[in-house]
Length: 615
Image (tube, rainbow, N blue to C red; front, top):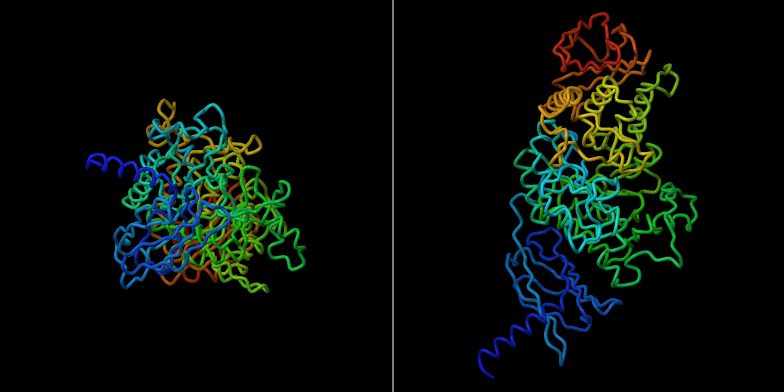
């Protein structure tokens, strides 16, 4: 055999061998992680009987697990943090009388301070956006040949072409508004024939959807956000995957997902999770039932899957330098598995914040899911932040009605929501909001009333918790959920070439849009530098005559907030608030600069919030 022929044959064998290993996940890892064990999922044709070997200082194989499918190996490594260094090594998969398979694996160095990163907090304001509906920065990735769902902006439920570059192109807009943290709905691949724009039916956990961009583009977007002083939260989904997830064609084992004799949907009865009297059959259907026909329910009790998922979450944090995680449909998951997940994340990153979607019917139900909550089940979710849907529910109606002090209407709805704070382990770690991508558009509920919008936003930005606003709320975007989710997820005006209005610039906005934007921007930028609002104490007073008064205070500052929901000016006597006013007799409104004499009474304009810095 000639040397040339040998090299050709060797090249052919290498190509054949590399084609046999279809996936290794995670594709790379890091030295110096607190958890020194790493589980590799290796997927390839008929690999289950192969011996796995390699030689690399500080890294050894603890165990190799073979599962039901012959096309998987789960290999657990031990990475000694005192010996292992960053580098690449060859992993060999051998089998007698067959050609060897191999792949190269890499261990990377962690970036400096990675473990001690600070997550989002009550000092932040979160800006929630849907990438497909925010801005189209790269029209070339609108349609991908291998993905069936194509762009059609004429249909609410089709893809519209927004992407990661579109978000990155408008970071200055988000910063100008005064938001400090960006939460994007899921950006990982959703390979389904339709309705894939929302992102919640993930088909590849390690891959950014190419219609949004690439893994590197997402990583660069996070870095660009940090350069602007903005944090980034990644939306994750552990309860279910997409029906076209790559593993659905070849499950590692039957219980990788929850399977039923016939299709069984979740009963959506979250109360069963903590109901001491609940029947097992009801609890099982809640947790193990499928969220939708297109969303297989993942089995978090399967140790291989759950280790795989925990590692995936950590991989995204470490790889892209995330500031936080938002976890979808939190109560639908196995509760003990979720506690293990949250603890694994916060063990690795003690200051990283995680919020869970806790769309439940009472403050008691929501509080159960927050870390360190007191309950007779002795359950600790380890989840730092929960979503305060009870305050959101109060905001839905409170400004459209009036009520006496004993009625649960008007401003009393806000008072009652805050009065339940005794249930929560940490009220600073409550995500508070008037709307999101699943609710009615708030400006639709207010019928476009600017005064009510200002009152609502002022309340959100001055009460306890972490405020979140939904993209476009700041310019009056509306939509009716009764027409379908597509109507509450409209395209941001100016995000597409040829849009008649470009709301990303003051010049491009209408006068009405600028009035909303300017008010909210001033409020948010004021809030940035007010620790008294971020972590100060709160004292509130039972609303009288539909006026809600509360104070935020610490050792340095005292802020008085007056919400007048009346359609007429009101005179507010201040003697009732003496315990909070103390010796302060003058209040300066942060929005107008006007001074108010607080010694006896003050005139509060109709449908107005006064945010007074006390002097």
